[in-house]
Image (cartoon, rainbow, N blue to C red; front, side, top):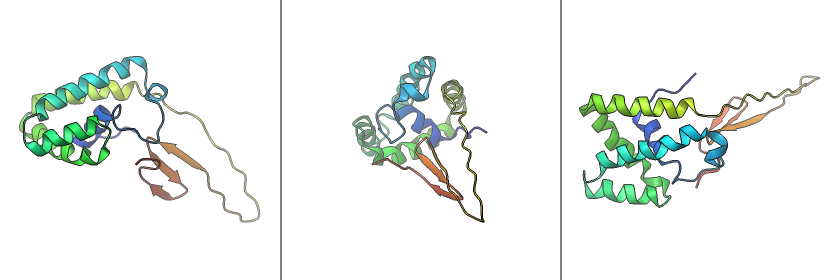
Amino acid sequence: MTEPLTAGLLITLAVQEFVKSGTGDLTKRFTAEALAKIPILWGKIKTRLMGRSAKVNEAIAKVEGGDSTAVETLTKNLDVILDEDPAFAKELKVLAQTIQAGKIQDNSSMIQNNSDNAKGWQTKVEGGTAYIGRIHLANIGSK
């Protein structure tokens, strides 16, 4: 199942080379073709966001400096742009889909045998989100 291509996902894809998270090196998570498209996606988004306001310009500078706190500002503003310009929205979504298609999938499995009514928990972290039993913890390992 793939995530819907929202403004938040578009920003997350575009700025991940700047904003370091606990998810590891990008080259381990994406194919070379997908990695080559990430700066293109960011360039298109940055061009449309730049100049909208001083706050947006500041958020762009912060994100490019590795500060993930400004992502929300960029997401909100991109969401407005996507609503106003469906053609641009489609262009970004097609580009993001090609990047997502180049995401290297982890097809590993985990096996655990419990006996005598014991409970066991296995963990797996995908994209900065830890799935621990029935508990969902977002942004594990980020700043």
